[in-house]
Structure formats: structure tokens, C-alpha cells
Length: 316
Ligand SMILES: [Zn+2]
Image 1 (cartoon, rainbow, N blue to C red):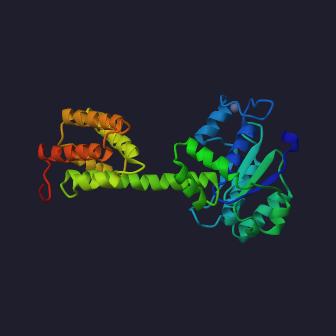
Image 2: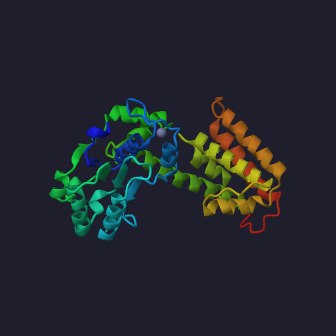
Image 3: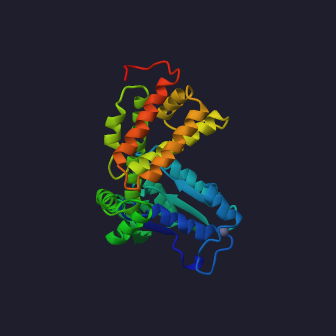
């Protein structure tokens, strides 16, 4: 396999189509000490371990020092210097340049010299969504590989297999212009935002600043099961924390919830966790789902009355 490798590979394709994943796969195949006959990495050797930990000394990354900034000539020179040294494992050295179009003019010129006089056993992989921004001199010295957007139905099925609803999968795919990893990333970002919002609402209900019945109504829809799963996970975190475990590292909102729950005792937390678990079971039982949510949120709001939580605002 190594005999057929070019010195430089230019992988292009729109954001989220899997360019980086492909480059990383290539790194595994190239640097693994005992790859299978078809080039698959063994996943067991020291090299595979270093790659998984992101510490393999023969895989070098050339990235902007800050996201959105240019890759500078000094960075390319430092890289060229490293390439002149023999590989640590006595095998290949691989460089991933991402995004290659971030190289400014001087950096690109400097890289061109490396491309014109390649060192042995070295593979440079340039990743870009905008190959047209690279100088033609660089493009012509690379073997080019363009990754197309995969079949829409396949991608949709893949997203659904990760637990997304059909409508959601179609929506995110459209936003991501068909790129699967981009769609997944958009969904994860949105989901983090909603998670934060749900937690803030729980805090506000506890503080008496939001009406539990209103919130129950808002939570109704496609995702109430998800919200209850989050709530249960938060409660389990809090119980562990109260029992001497490490505090869960989450957003500022989570910290706020912890402050509140410091005033609630463990027994009450266990009760509530049981109730959330029961509610999760009841959701699919045909009972009125909004009533189930209301019961739970009202119980949560009343819990505040039983505690010494100091900063309650308003009254119920
Ligand atoms: Zn291996």
C-alpha cells in the first residue's frame, strides 16, 4: 500500500462531509504497526493507542493558531523542520493541514517548496471545503480526492439510527446541505441549547418564578421523554454529589440547580427520582401525558416549600 501512496493528497468536499474522518482513518492505516491485509488498523498496538489519545509523534497537524485565522509561514517552516527528521517509529510521517485554504500566501509558497522536494515516507494531507482558494501550483502537486455528499436517504437513515426523528433528520440534513456530520453537529448544538433551557425552567419553577402547569404545557410534544431523561440524569448526578461524589461539571445553570438542591435532602431527591422514573414508564401507557408532567412539576415546585431555600420570589 505504501508504495502506491502519493506524497500529497488534497481532500475536498463541503463542511461536515467527513474529510477529517477520512484523513484520520488514513493515519491509522499508515501508522498502525500491525494493519490487516486490507489496511484496517489493528486498534491494539502502541501506535493505535497514541492515535486514539491524539499523541502520535508522527502525525502532525497544521491548523490556524486560532479558529478562523490564517495559517502562517512560521508554522509551515516549523513543520518542514520536523519533516526533515526521521519518523519516531521508523515508519511514515503524516501531516494533516486543516483547512488548507487558511494558509496565507507566504505559507502556501513555503509549503510549495516541500511539495516540490518531498521527503521520503511522508504524506501531506490537505483538507479544504474551498479548493479554488488554493494556488493552482499547490493543487497540481497533490493527488486530488473530492468527497461528494452521500445519498440523502442513506444519510437520513443513518441520522435516524442515532435516535433522531424522521422530521428532525430531514430538517437538519437540509440545513447541512446534505452533509451527515454537519447535520449531526447542528442537532447536538441545538440539543445542548434546549437542555440548558429546560434546566433553567426547572430552576425557575423551584424558585416560584414560573408556573409548573405552564411549563408542563410547553414540554408537551415530540420530546417530553427526552426532557424527563435529562431531568432524571441531573437528579442522579445530584444524589451522587450529595453523597460525596464529585460535582457534575456542567453549565452555570447546573451550578444554580446545585445551590437549590443543597437545601433539599437526599430522601426527597430519591422520591423525586422515583417519580420521574414512574412518569417515564407512564408516558407510553395511554394516560394523559400532560397531567403526568403537571403532577411531576407541581411536586417539584412544592418541594421548595418544604425546604429552607432562601431566595424565593413571589408566592404560589
Ligand atoms: Zn495498530
